[in-house]
Length: 486
Image (cartoon, rainbow, N blue to C red; front, side, top):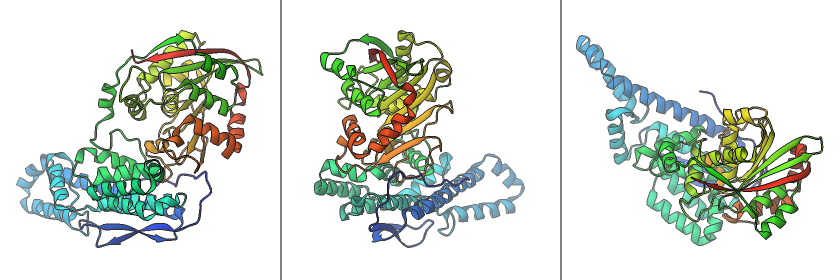
């Protein structure tokens, strides 16, 4: 199994007290008490160690599954009948490997027999070696994240991490309530935002529900989750909840929006301001630009999710966000394709898509669509506060630019947050910063990103504007569209 290098950081690390894991007892099948205490540790070393430990955990899990499968294979009894002594030796060795605390530590799983054995082990409090190593790997990620997030080293946050690592759900809930009481709800969310996926993975791994375990293992491996962390609902079920074919209708801006769009330019701050003005009630904007080099190019602006209701009549709802995170063909992508067809954008036209939150996810989903990038020349995807690190464009020439406020919870929902060792492609441009001025959910608002680019990180604004310079020119068309599920 190939080890993953730590994800490159885009911010300057701060030196302060960092929690480190404290283990008592033995690995394998014995219960392991994991806590956090202050110590000074290099976060890069912690991330590197977490990668090695995660690989070991995944190998141990695979070994347990393979041993279980060999024991429960229908052909084994047939051979055992012919060679009973050999069969007794094999069974004895396999059972010892699966149950010995110095071995795999009760790591039977897979199939009816394996899952039944795993359920019994879970009720009895036995922690397999694979899970013990996975928990320690997540602990190291949390510790590493504390280097850039001092609030994670507070007593309240350490209590929450301790409870999550020990697999005590009720204590975790009480610790979360204490954290919210101490910091306030918004600051509490901001505090845990860098490790939200690690905490969710720990909850799914250590609860008694085996259906959601895949979420934890995929998160540990830095892959793309295909289930939710609570019930283990699959992406296909979420897609079933979001089945609309997608529809786009021309719309006219109101007076305020018209004034905002009239002063737009090829500037990332201007694009984010425009997205903020569009709102998240189903609008999208297609812009035609007569560029300075004489070419005509198009820019598509996609807003994010409305959290007012779980579902509404537009693609910009919570169900649509979950669907876009887990799948590529969604109601939002289908509606966007309708926009380009209705606008008569010529085949082969150069296109840049700028999206906030779900809009950024949708932009990357379009970039992953082979037919879409064969129809239009998708030159740039610019995402703002979007969880897209686990997606890859079909056309390697597409320039991906990701803007992330690390106090924003949403970009980490792809399992690739600041504590993750996931590696992004070298040709991507990810610009991340810590903005202490805004707590979540304000830190996720497009207005906050625009303000940060203007005031806190103007060098990032200049860099993005340089990268999208091909779209400098005169805006010759601003067409608003209203997107619907049906």
